[in-house]
Image (cartoon, rainbow, N blue to C red; front, top):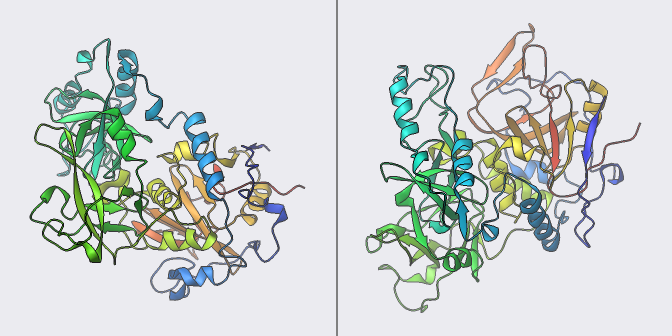
Length: 481
């Protein structure tokens, strides 16, 4: 049996969380084997409607407002992430000129030609010629030997695509939720490096801090390096702490009207007179954001936008506490699952990323990178690791810990009735019925479930298939035996 511990040494004054074995008994309640009840609604383990409220979980915590990592520790961890994790891109450290081989590698990594049939939204097989046209539009042959590094700011929430096309394609006929070309999404104010342009001139291949893929060129405004990177550090600013907020409607400046702003976005405030209308509206009941906009020639401009004071936002990142982790997660409860941030929502890894970003903590984009990041405290599991070791690790789980199985991540919110409870953004879920047969739950959104009864297959539980436990907020230690 082998569990690999990757310690990153969070020995930062005031920032380290206690090791698991040092926590008081009231903080950890070891799960025991129980038969999970199934209420009339069919979701296993959710026996009380109160369990769908964050207060249910925070009220049971011994120290809900304990700061798990302070700001200096978070800043140090974020720096380590960009230094050590190959999935991250420190735009500030990219060279003044991009090497063509590097650009071609980024393009190749973004998407590979499918080896099995793909289906469209109508259930028809996608023709080989259509796929050929998508790859031809990448214009890989047009990548120069080297080029000046160009910068831009995202001006509108935009999908990141594996190929430069809006066409949605699927691995299974009729399953139109999992678009195999949908990679992620970028939010307003995100800095990018513009590495390439599609043959039809409608798409840009961009490098963002957490991902590289194709985006609609109309959602990116190009500016100088200083202006683009400087935007991300301007003060004062607002942090979006709600699940989804929007700027107010404006006819006067439609480029900033009703923009979707997702949790964790950091946007600077505009320097405008407090008694002058902004886009036809007095600003006293709002915060005036300085939003990037795209001019007609594609260049970067700035325009003020109003964020209502009723919107869930803060003057700085929230404190990283158990209560805030749970509260932030529950702000998405019931939101539709969106593979690769489709549908204007998010997927499992995006869900946990947005929660932690609202407290200033950066995570890699995908579960595959999050689960093994050398910058984050984690333990990994091999397929042949025995059940005793897995259950011992589960018994030590804390609020905010991230539990990974192949292709999925879940966040711990507490323990109840001998089971570990999670909040996660999931496409589905299964448990074993009284007859031993798997029962499928069409969850398809942000939900609360227990860990123990969830089944990965007919013979393996989620615990059997755990690949990693990540603690983005402190030191992780396994109990000794």
